[in-house]
Amino acid sequence: MTVTERLLRVFRVDRQIDGLRSRLRAAERFLAQQNHQIEQIEQRRASLESQLRQLQAAQLEAEGESAQIEEHIEVLRERMNTAKTNKEYKAVLAEVNTFKAKKDELDTRSLEMLEKIEQIKQQQAELVAQAEERAKVREVAESDREARAEEIREKLAELEAARAELVREVPPKALTVYAELVERLDEDAMAQIEIADKKRHEFHCGSCMMLLPVETMSGLLSHGRLTQCPSCGCILYVEESDREIMTSTKR
Ligand SMILES: [Zn+2]
Image (cartoon, rainbow, N blue to C red; front, top):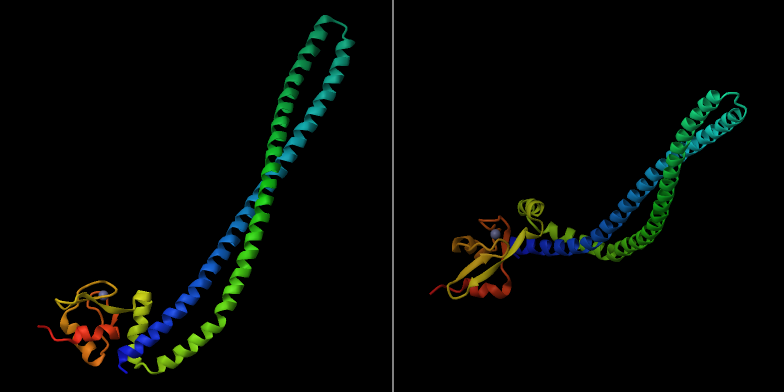
């Protein structure tokens, strides 16, 4: 078996391992998204809660102040009733009016704050509902991730054991080249040589589609030598079914 054939066996197992892992990765990503959304909901809830507490305190303060002014106005009214002169009466009346205006202002603000408090409570209720909904989705996502992990566990162990066996049969130098390519090109680390034009004897790299010079292919075709695409650098291989077409002499 040639070095390219040995590497190809490793590559094919790697593709299977990657395929299995990608299913788990998708489930993990989905779960992470749910966790992130739940965190955001919690943050919004906390922020609303502190807004609510501030507003409630301010509203109570306004209400208390208003009550005090009301009491003061009552006292002033009694003084108006016992006023001895018209001048005194008018002076107290002016004071009453000033306090009334102040009280009105406080009452208006207090009402506005009460409305805002109701709005915030409404928003909080909505967030609680959202959080409950999201928690259900997360639960499903969690059990899905578990199921996926369980599903692939055995197969993954099998493939990894098989890979370890196959790797032992690849010369270390070729393995280093391969590992670097996987790092850079991932699933395109190896590519099949494809037939571009059978009659004109033209072939291209299955990954980057560049036409391959005959001299690039000859070492691979005759000895299975480790051959990289001059353009993208991937390790090239030949499907057995195509070999005859590629090795047939040009007319
Ligand atoms: Zn290429």
